[in-house]
Length: 501
Image (cartoon, rainbow, N blue to C red; front, side):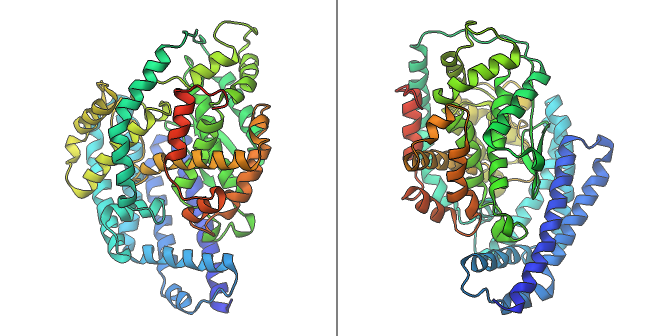
């Protein structure tokens, strides 16, 4: 380790503080910012993104990176590698493009809120067209610098090392098998005795209180984060200040509750990153596939199991004043509701079996948008056609079609595949964790996530970017990532009805 490396650590600590400021401003924009502040906020965000870019691309950075020596320390070596990666990505882009993209996405996100509410794609189209244009420019420039195609450059920004050639075979197989699998699961579900659905209304205050209790049981540190409401659930914020959101409807408590459990999985990962490396690139999360695996591990793998439902049912009873023994409220019935399979329009509310179809639709369309093979004006019809082909649904309006997600207005092209890859990662990690510590599942049945969290802290969270996801998976599970564990999980839970699934 030499002086050049130590100087780099100081520069990247400044960048980390800027990232935190951007994170909190971004959270505020989505949660509590008054609409009249949108234009000025877009300028603020663009200025800070521009400042971040200036620091990262300053001539001194290239000199320091050329001179830096991290010595024999594994973490410092990995940190220097991440510094070089960020510098390469940043120097590929002119500052004007960085600021223009920040402004365009901020404006488009605000326009999306109104367009989604009014189910009016046409009103969003000019804003989204500008975001798409700038995203293509970014993809071309970054791809040229890193030797990648346009779409691979976008994928790599969210999931380092992931390529379209890795994803295509998996998704092609899914697209071929999914309609038949969904049909088989629906037949199995129809053969089961009917269950009474819990009836509302479910007051939002009580839903929120339940969500907060569940967050704390899972290990969420309330001194380092908070829960709020937004149009689209997300987890964001800053280092040691993790902000998550959900959205409520009084007619059904399950979507908001599961949204909280999902976002808490993200939050626990952020809270478990190594504090001693918090201001350095190596201390950041390992990419969005591993991030989504942590949310899906909690929400899908464990919190939709019968084991967890046995503990959860009394908590739900007390939250909504339900008398024990009321039809439809027992643990078995609750579990049936948590694992109910029904093709639907909204991705974030989808069950495990139909969820991959939503990702396949978005993956296919965003590739076509980036390549220019699909005109933006044709997006709504193309979205509706693909959803009908995979799920048999006729999308009634844009709000429940291509306007439902914030990702494309926010410029997050290349993000969606991480959800499907994350589901596969989550299933493989669950198997490894429960094999390594058989006490994990019984503890979950008591509302105790500590044994699971301890395993994750050691094998996933605490490693941050000191190793690649393939290496983390090999070390934690003994094999590379594949779809086997995920498909086995789906069969056990939905076709074999295994009690601990």
